[in-house]
Image 1 (tube, rainbow, N blue to C red):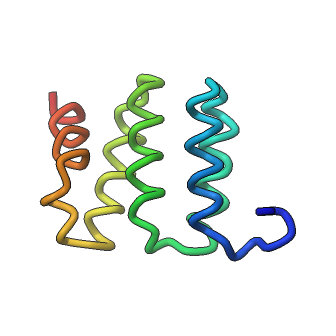
Image 2 (tube, helix red, strand yellow):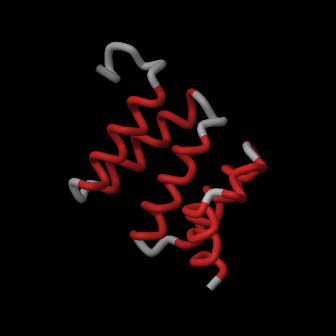
Length: 91
């Protein structure tokens, strides 16, 4: 479905989440990268990319994703997942 209608960024984020849960983090990050190229304001994609990068041990990329999410939406500070990821990056 995402190949036929490439404007469905929400579907791409869900597909990336499914790929990550299936232990294919490289494909999930590629899917999120494609999604963010189309819509860089997609905060959920930035947060999911930060989660995946943190799980892979790449704290620099995780911190960068969190900064980009914060730059897109300042109210993200109230999101508990954002705060958890932020504290993990700072530790």
